[in-house]
Image (cartoon, rainbow, N blue to C red; front, side):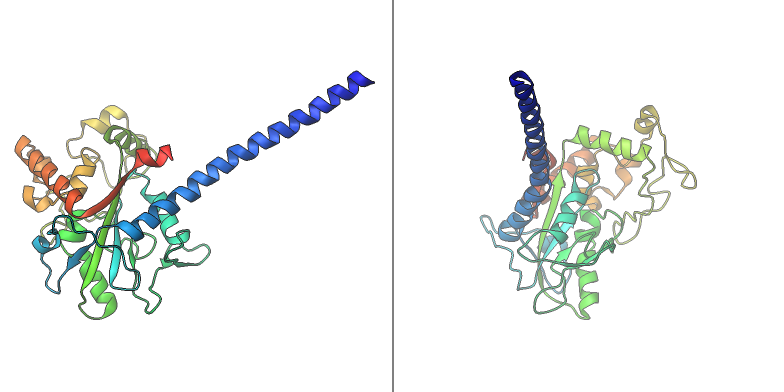
Length: 292
């Protein structure tokens, strides 16, 4: 009887330990997916670097900043966070939490609707320019050239306000190890993604089929593509995507670098992206997301 009772007691204890371990495991996952984005979004709201645009759209003035200058985001002023969403860098997760869970300036979201209203307390003007607030109004996965160089953000917000207005812009993005990001994009394309509706606006006009040839028949798509075929297309935008999306493509003839690649153009594009990251962006890294 004593042995049976002992075995029964051990069985109950084992089940309790299993349940406890399961709770700890689930809790750690919940912490990662909820607490980390809250911290990141609050850091942006408190410590992000701003850019100011005049009534006259002038890219050169946008990227200038005084060395050492740091101005905190002011939710009651004319400050706007602009998220540059580079594919496969955890941007979707970050954007969802930014509109639904950050507490400093909550957005109004409705069930079963992707977009949320991120208007200010005193007005309905948005403080957030992103996929789940304004939508893809500058094009699917619009890059720095489309958003900033071509002044799309300013034009869209002026149109919504009904007049031109001075605003401070806090540009932010997520970066990821280039190899990991490339493989992730390849797998995503294998599942059917193409982003075929992206506009790729540069120098004031969308890229034509001659400017930017496709790697596949748009009527069929690229689902199930092999890795060999994926890396064989010279016009594949997965190559060097992060550098290209963060640089001023007007400096390299827009998408001419894909048709006529050169070391000099690649160097110009890289230096432009680095300059923009230093002077314009508040950024974080996908690898940091996985560590926290």
